[in-house]
Amino acid sequence: MSALRALLVAATALGLGATAMAEDKPNPPADAKAFQDYFVKKFPKVAFDDFVNGPYSMNADMRRQWEEKEQFPPYEFALEAGKEMFAKPFKNGKTYADCFPNGGIGIRQNYPYFDDKEGKVVTLELALNRCREANGEQPYSYVKDEMASLTAYMAYTSRGKRFDIRIPDDPRALEAYEKGKEYFYTRRGQLNFSCASCHVQSPGERIRAEILAPALGILNAMPIYRSEWSGMGTISRRIVTCNSQTRAVPLEPQSDEYRNLEYYLSYVSNGLPVSGPGARP
Amino acid sequence: MRHFPRHFPRHVSTTNVMKKIVFATMVATVCAGSARAASEADYLAAAAAAESANKEAGRLRNQWTVTQAALNAAKKAAESGNFDSAVKSAQEAEALAKASIVQATSEMQRWKDLEIR
Image 1 (cartoon, each protein chain N blue to C red):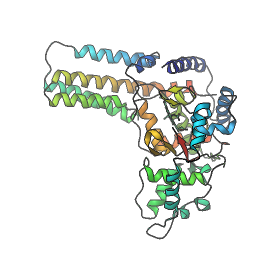
Image 2: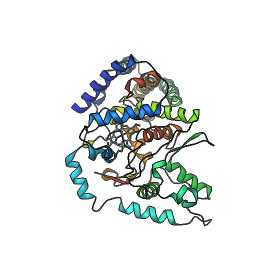
Image 3: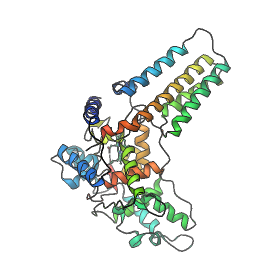
Image 4: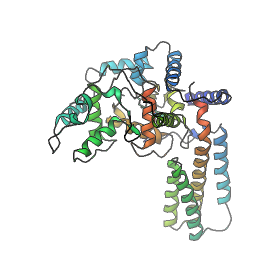
């Protein structure tokens, strides 16, 4: 519990310090710079690209175990399944490749994007289900294996490509980004924690057996295999789980809030490489 | 789903919001301790108040899992005819739902304090 106590002290100190600050206009590039600088300064020994490895970037012992495991990665099965699913034609003869730029290969780093026709953020998981529906297929659950397999494959074909999330010159896009930021920092649940309470103020600290991942690059390794789940988890599944941990009722996967949140979190990780699918203890 | 140990929220209660929340819970507990045995009507009234507060929390997209858990416990107690316990749980649910509303409302400004700048 001492890690959590430290976290609270930090939260209180930060709160007092920041209230006096002037409010300024939305400025995503400045946000991203401040965000990245914060983690780089906090963890001077962690190489920039290593932040995408979540808890492993924070802990040498865990990292060693992981590197041994990577020789037979536990996501292998999902990756194979995803590759097959991706290639298999729908009943109408079309495939996922028909729905995505570059046939869906090597494009993970561009998601989520702002869709100016809908006026909303579109995540990769959402785009996959929309592709299914447009081709007369039932959508997949956002928190189950099929979606994890498909996104695992798409991440794999994009490994090493650097996140390149764009905020077009459109007030709605900027608003989506700002709302995502607000969601990220808003405390919720009976435990009164925001995403930032754990993943900004306490990365590297332990919560029970787990080591908290830094918020910088936190989506780059998704989807992930987790022993605790004995399976794969999508971004949606992870966010829902993190909400429940604070005793907050999670929102529906791919709700506007979660889409905006993913937009914000991905944007401030621009420049970091895709490393998914990942494996966690 | 993982749960933190029961004593966990106490560490969290250092902020003003949490003080209000804890206070609300205490008020509810004191109110629930009246001498007269509770009736089904008391339970129904307490549950309706809790449901309505929880609905408002839902409108603010900020329900707590523990609110629904307390409501479920109230329903279960009422079904077995234990209306004292049912009223107590329903009042707890209402206090939790109100605390979640206070949280959502105060966070509309307070979230900025945490932002990395």
